[in-house]
Image (cartoon, rainbow, N blue to C red; front, side):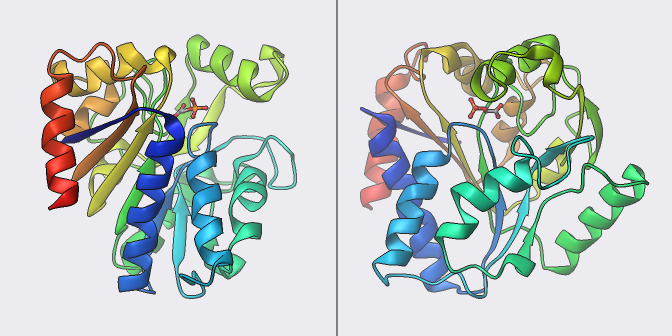
Length: 259
Ligand code: PGA
């Protein structure tokens, strides 16, 4: 696990976007795993700028998103399909038919999840998986107590995640946040060839500490990334503030990135 400590989230987002842009330039048929939430928005803006500048094209890129709320159609302004269309897909030249988000309205959610896994496999697996982290240490919607071997399935949100998401996206209305979601599993996520996780703000400091310096535990599902051999964690100063070896990680990752 490499921990990149940037001064600001702007700097971290630019660096992470640069890695994705370079990877798409190298392999125009890259398979991306994408995330929603407030954290990756700046990175998506930077990715779009590179497309606008004619630096890179996503015409042949395929994407699979991490998760979707059960019960929200893709047209709902709080659905993750809607979020992705607005925050990234409309701003780059990706073919919308190549973008995949789990269907939260699926009549048979179990089949929906199994089909999703099969699609990713048929595409050759995810080359780069983008992740955020929940304040409770979740990745995708894999809440504390979820098996680190879990596969894409129906999952149940914790009260703390419902609270976080209500504050950020549902105008504070907790009763409007769906209590269930379809989510890629921890095991599914860890099969990606490379992982880029973004964590910004003091509210993520405990989760980052648990992920990086805690034991591997289903209580902090992000800690499973300790078992991944190409996971890059992009922090700002605040989210990295509780790391015991912060300065060492920062020096090591900067040296590797320059290398
Ligand atoms: P956030 O969510 O980016 O809105 O903080 C992250 C997450 O829950 O994974």
